[in-house]
Length: 324
Length: 82
Length: 126
Image (cartoon, rainbow over all chains, first blue to last red; front, side, top):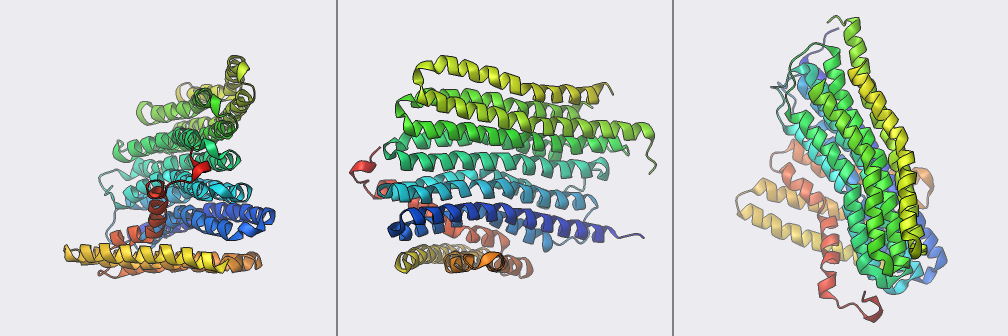
């Protein structure tokens, strides 16, 4: 049974759209559920404050939902794209775009729920700082969305750039690998950034006077947690813009696919780990502000070390792309 | 398209290298992050021992890094030796 | 409790619509009617979605099926302007997509500028 090129491209676009929305909804749903769960705990602890808690939860969920709206945008784009006269390589690009955005929305969706939940609970604990808690939650939650935005950028590039100059074999593997690299790496960074943001809301409620060093430590910690997803972005760009030599061999395709998988998977752990380190530092800046500078230094040293495996993964990916 | 045995072996080796290093990086990344988090908490609780605690953290991280290095070795073996 | 919820819904939804109308009119006057119309359309659905998050909170108490139904309803609603933009040339997709995030942008802008607008009271000074 033979299919026309157009049918294959359309099938890839629909499959990509389905993967994108399916995975994208999961993350935001877990994150919003976490926020709502802590809002309930907070209300049970201090029920007179329920209007404030409710308001905070509403605003937090609206921002936390962004990741899944990114996924929705990409999914609808994939479903309604005009694939008339597209080259076969477009099928791989569209599938890669769906995978990239779906995976990328997962971590940010879960992660941006953490500050929401902790801010709700913090309001019950320390009602005097309600407005600061909401602001801090929104900053943390918005920064946790960055990896999802990276994924959306890569997905849009995969959808709209014309790849017809790329040979189908092994180009298909490069484009799916480009999607996997940014998408998988974004999971860890989104989740880790959320851990740091949640800890800063918790700390702010514990010790409101520490707001300035808390927010600084949180932002630095989140920025470092985002490095693995920047590695993922870098490998995706190389895979998209370096035209591979046409080759019928399976090994050439496997090398490019594995390059994307390697940086992507390798970014998950360091992203989460860096987030944990940042959360630990932020939590103790709140309790012991005098140690702020030392805590920041230890956090950065610890994060740099736990970053090293992501760097190994990127080196292996670069070897797979350029050397073998 | 006929796939030859040698080509299949090479393809599997490359995929294996990518998956080995990729999955192998998850564990040390999370584990070392936990070490760093606890070190920060410990230094916050007991600032006088900051130097000792930082050293302990680095030793602990170096040990938990070893599985990541095993993965790297296996990945390089798969890439260049097999 | 309903007052504050209503109040915050009204504040952000109306700000979103005003901002979208202003920016949309500007874009239309500047010679990009599809972009302007798309932005207004996206912002309209963004505001409806934001109001619905609050309204459907009651459904969240109603067990897993009602929760899922609420989520699906809202995602379905957000898809409407995107599908319209994809199908009809008078709405540009590049206007709809920023429009869909306008409520979030308004929330962030409101809190981002709060530091300069409201003097923090005593204890909060850090």
